[in-house]
Length: 106
Image (tube, rainbow, N blue to C red; front, side):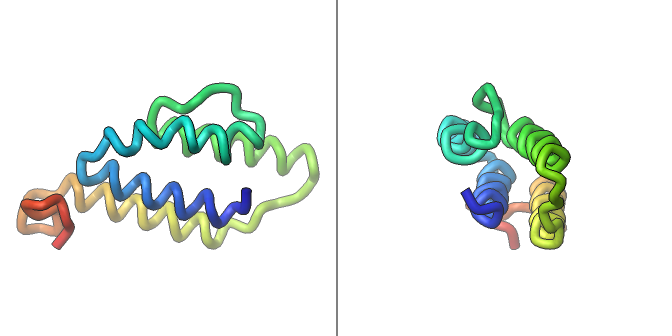
């Protein structure tokens, strides 16, 4: 699985989590494990998005050490910044960048 696909999935799941769609996030954890985390050595299906991110980063670091390579961080850093922005908007009071009545930022 290309690393860019992991970053897209992670961003999509973070958006869903930020608007309270934990049902969608939970439903995708087995797929995330089957297609991304399992193939890089994760044993268990993650319980939530934070667990999935932690497992991915841990497995990536271990594989980088094993194969003596480094996966470029630029795109991942951009996704991480986006996730932080999504989460901060979701936690902001209404009228200050938080989610609107339909769960959309704005």
